[in-house]
View 1: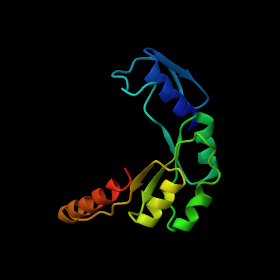
View 2: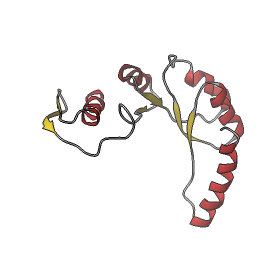
View 3: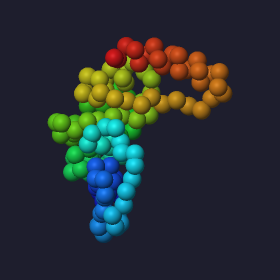
Length: 137
């Protein structure tokens, strides 16, 4: 995975990119259009393991663990995160106590869990979620 991240960064930041690693290996290539974000789009390493967090730190990218179910667990989940590492938590239940716990512990981005439902139910759920999200802006 480290090589894949490095190869993506090379492709995004060089007009003519090449990469020669153990698992990823390509001669000069061209890829257009380039990302608008400079030097490249944000990259988050997903996973709840210390290995995922270590990779995020090593690569200088963000960490994206899955949400915990109990707000009491939030500080423990985030305790090993070094300062300066961006954290985006995925699959967060849209409950104020969990969202508040993440906000109080320095998380600036979450993705909310949305179960599959018929279109009308999903649209109603999105309206309710929009009201919740507005409280955290």
